[in-house]
Image 1 (cartoon, one colour):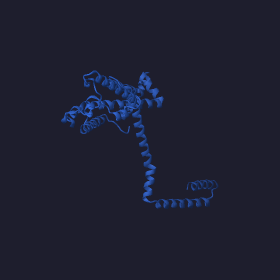
Image 2 (cartoon, rainbow, N blue to C red):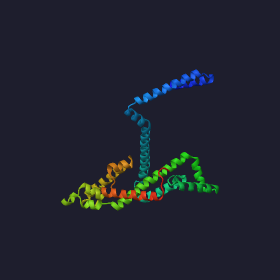
Image 3 (cartoon, rainbow, N blue to C red):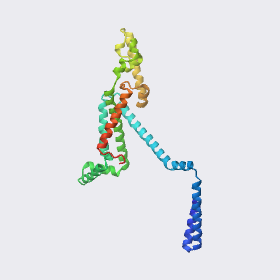
Image 4 (tube, rainbow, N blue to C red):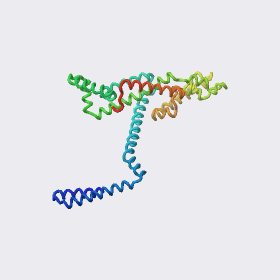
Length: 292
């Protein structure tokens, strides 16, 4: 069909140059017959074939882009999250460190100007206007924004690095607050089935003490204490060895987080529903524009 169209177009061009009316008339007849053939071909296509062609041409590209976006988003989050958690290992002030990283991310996204990608259009235009005025006054922050504007790739990298750092920190602090509010470890320990028999199972010991024997559980004689202390040191050494060679997310998935809170499913569901409602309410008050 493409070859026929090209041939007809060439013949039409030659006919116009030579002012050949007979050839032009013949070309019109050929064009009409081709249109009739195309209409018949379209009519011959079944509903299933028509639906399939539509989905293949228009819907499939959207699905592919959505899947690739999800893969990119999750992979980037895992890279940043594992890097931060690896760096946080054995940190005494973990919460304070996460707050510090969060503030650093705020500084980065403000420095690159990416923070204004999240405000409504009026606020964005107002910030853009004021930035132009500050640039005329040679303000340092405006000059930095101009530099990032001229280096789009660097701006993109810094902005999204800051976004994922903020995402990791907000996720951690959000979960930590939820654990403080919803932790039911004491209640669950008090109602374990083994409590009725007076036996402390390995599950109860691990929930209560992190899975390792402390020195108070040693027998009174020295040999047993030495063996227990040696076992605990070897256990800690093995844990550090494994943690240093795999990602933190896979370590906690297999070994468990001994410091994690025990939160019942209904409580966690209610907590997150309330958080979603509060967040959506304030986003609406701040005129957050999803399309922007």
